[in-house]
Amino acid sequence: MSPDAPDTERPPASPRTTRRQWWIFAALTPAVAVGWLLVMPSAPVAQPAVFNHARHSALACVACHRGVESRARATLPVVSDCAKCHATAPPGISEDQWKSFSGPQGFGWVQVTHVPDHVNFSHRRHVASGRLACVSCHADVGQRTTPPGTAPIRVDMKACLSCHRQEGITEDCAACHR
Ligand code: HEC
Ligand code: HEC
Ligand code: HEC
Ligand code: HEC
Ligand code: HEC
Image (cartoon, rainbow, N blue to C red):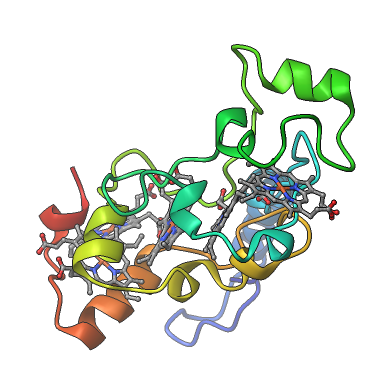
């Protein structure tokens, strides 16, 4: 809201209130600017390695996202999920990198789609019971040639509720919030 938005309810401002409003405005401007910087979308994430979903489109999603049909978390893959086809480092990844990915740290893939901790979300529920396609919540990630830097679709409360309303699924706060 702009601080000088017309306000028809208020009596004509005296010079003093005008001056006071100016000071409030002057004091708030930097605070609003800082606040804006804090809520601005963060920079795109950099993944630890190249990955091309389209090259792997013959595989079922669950081959690399092992939890997606059976658990809350879809999970991101580990080297043993790749080793069946890539006994050595695949093109674009150095042998040294591949060796370190095989160690206890794993790949270190960064999850870009998140809900906050107070939200209850289960892949099993949506994919196995609800029979929803991945594309309804993740757009084209499964067909991409490079990792998305940010979540391609914002999964916020509005998006959850609009599908739930459409499908006649619960809109009860306690179903989604713990
Ligand atoms: C109803 C919406 C919805 C559907 C359908 C859905 N996802 Fe998700 N997905 C989400 C949300 C929300 C998150 C973030 C969850 C979190 O923060 O715990 C997520 C996160 C993920 C992640 C990040 C890693 C993790 O452990 O969760 C992967 C990978 C993923 N989804 C893959 C898939 C695949 C593959 C499918 C289809 C088989 C699928 N998703 C279907 C909404 C969905
Ligand atoms: C079922 C077999 C299979 C599995 C499992 C598999 N890949 Fe691949 N991957 C392939 C094939 C086939 C190619 C294309 C071969 C080529 O271009 O030389 C490929 C290509 C690649 C490339 C090169 C991509 C490009 O653009 O040329 C990378 C990087 C890669 N895979 C990474 C992985 C990772 C990481 C995993 C595990 C998370 C994995 N792959 C699992 C079969 C597989
Ligand atoms: C060969 C392994 C492999 C297969 C098969 C695979 N993925 Fe992935 N997926 C990955 C890797 C590695 C990442 C992390 C890097 C990236 O984002 O590209 C990832 C990331 C994702 C994410 C991003 C999660 C987040 O953080 O938001 C989604 C969504 C996803 N995959 C969906 C799919 C879908 C849908 C399919 C099936 C059509 C699929 N994947 C098949 C390996 C795979
Ligand atoms: C594209 C449609 C769609 C979206 C988007 C969606 N859901 Fe759902 N949700 C469903 C369907 C369909 C079911 C019913 C699944 C079943 O039959 O068990 C469901 C079920 C649920 C349940 C279980 C409800 C119960 O009665 O116990 C919870 C919790 C839930 N969703 C949370 C979420 C959250 C949180 C989000 C957003 C991050 C979300 N959903 C986004 C379609 C959706
Ligand atoms: C279908 C799932 C779903 C239902 C039902 C739902 N929420 Fe949410 N809610 C979410 C998700 C996902 C988020 C986190 C993303 C966001 O902030 O939009 C959220 C965020 C919120 C936040 C913001 C918290 C923050 O971190 O700023 C509040 C407050 C909230 N919900 C209250 C409610 C209330 C009250 C109800 C019942 C009238 C409700 N929600 C019903 C999914 C749901």
